Image (tube, rainbow, N blue to C red; front, top):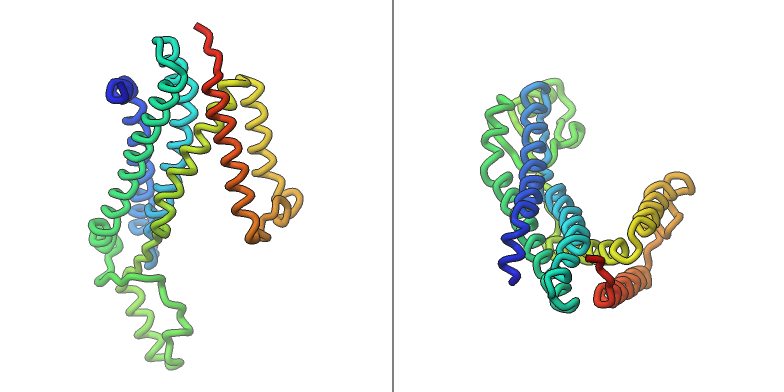
Length: 252
């Protein structure tokens, strides 16, 4: 049944994969244009950060969409709420795994294959890994040393590789799944009113630190109790979401 459901929603998966691929392509186009039209000698490789975060957002979106559409469809076709919930969770997990795997593959592709292309576009003679060194740190104080330093910098392309710690690649999909299910269950039960509530919470979280100072909402003051508190709130939200979906009323 899960395979049939995945096949029925394959266009959604292709869309999510296309967004990851498009984000990767856009980042490479920006990098190429920077090298061609400027004298930049330092290039960051950011796919290892941008793509996993994008994947997390897409997983959350997939969870909301699956709860809002596929869960109700399963009930209308005679599935029990428990089975419909399991199928919806399984489909979201498979979609999330595919999206995150593609982000990892594209990050590896950027690391292994693209630096030689960037070197050719920059016109530099050699490539070095790391940030462009600060000038005072590598200059010996003489005019000859200054000129030699400028010659070296002009002929070298510095590539800095950014990558999240390995555990983020496990945590981000989990965050996306939990957020998608909690938001999806909230919208399924409260409809348009729930959407306005979620929008209001998002606006508060977005603008309150800017309007009231960055210490509001405990930003910058996370202690040993903060993570357990957030985990408890998320767990409570997940328990409520499961209960709500298992008692959901779906109109025919």
